[in-house]
Length: 405
Ligand code: PMP
Image (cartoon, rainbow, N blue to C red):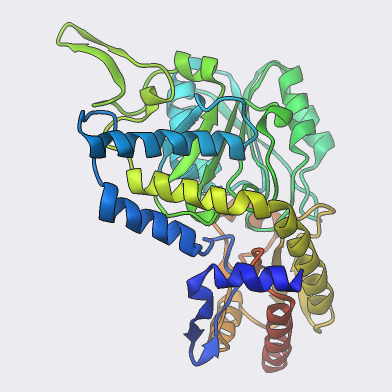
C-alpha cells in the first residue's frame, strides 16, 4: 500500500512543491483535488495538436475533437456504472447541474403547494437553487434534521415525506462533515411517495465507486475538479426519458433541431442541455481524470479509510480538540474545533507549517446553525495523502493547541 501511495504521488507534480519552506501537505481535497500529469497532458495535447470546435466541422481536426468529446461521455458513463451515456450532460460543475434541474425540471413539474425535501447538511449549491424555484412556483422547502453525530435523522426524514413531496435532493456525502448518507434507503423512501430524487455526488465520486443504477435516483451530479479533473467541468446525469421531457435550461447553438422565426424545436438529451461551444478541453481533461482514477478507486478507498481512522485517533488525543461529525460511515474528511482557537487562526497557523486545510462554514451555513457553531477547521484527505502527512497534521495541531490555552 505504501509503495502504491508513493507511486500515486509521483503522478501529481504539485505534490512535490514546498510551501513556506516546508513540504506541501495538501489536506483541502474536499474543496478541490489536485490533478495528475495524465490530466495536464491530455489538456495540453488537445490544445497543442487537436484544438477545433466540436459537432460542426467537416474537417479532420473537428472530427477528432468531436470523437474525443463523445468518447469522454462514454468514459463518464462507465465511471458511473451506466449502460449508456445518453443521460450524461456536460455542465460547469455540480452547482450548474443543480441549477439546471431546479430551473428546468422545476419549471415543468413544480406547482403551488408542492414540497421539496432537503436535509440540514446540504451545501448551499443544493439549497439556494431550490429556494429560488420554490419561490417562483409557490412550492415549499422542507428540511430533514441531522443528529448530533452528523447523520441524517432517517425517522424524521421518513415522516417528512408525503404525497406533497415532489422532489427530494440530498448529498451523497457531506462536504462539511464527511458523512456518507444512506442514499439507497433515502431514495427508496422518497420513491415510495412518488417523489423525484436528485443526489449531489460532489463529494462521493472521488472517494468510492458509484453505481448509479443501484442507487435508483433520477438525477446525480458531480464536479470534475473534485475528482482529479479540471475546474469548470462537471456532469449531470438524468434519466434520459426525464431529460427529454424537460424544457431547455440555456438555449442557442447545438441544442436545436430546427430554428425558424415561427418557432424552434429542440434536440433530445444530452445535446438539449449543452447549448453553445462546450468546455472541450475540460471534457477531455475530465475523461483523463476518470480514466486515471477508476482503476485505482478500490485501493484509494481502502487507503483513505486507513488515513481517516488514524487521523481521527490521533486528533482525538489532542486536549480541547473536538471532532464535529462522527457518523458511522464517513469519507476521509475531519471537521474539528480547538477550544480557545478560531478555525481561521488554526488554518493560518497550519499553513505556516505547509499544511493546507479549509476553515469556515464550508458553504453549509444552515448546517453550522443547526450544530450551534459558526464554522470548523476541516482536513480532507485524498488517496495520495500519506500516514506521514497525518503525523505532520497531528504534530502541528498539538503545537497550535498549546498556543490556544
Ligand atoms: N455540493 C457539494 C456537496 C459540494 O461539496 C460542492 C463544492 N464544495 C458543491 C455541491 C458545489 O460544487 P461546485 O462548486 O464544483 O459546483
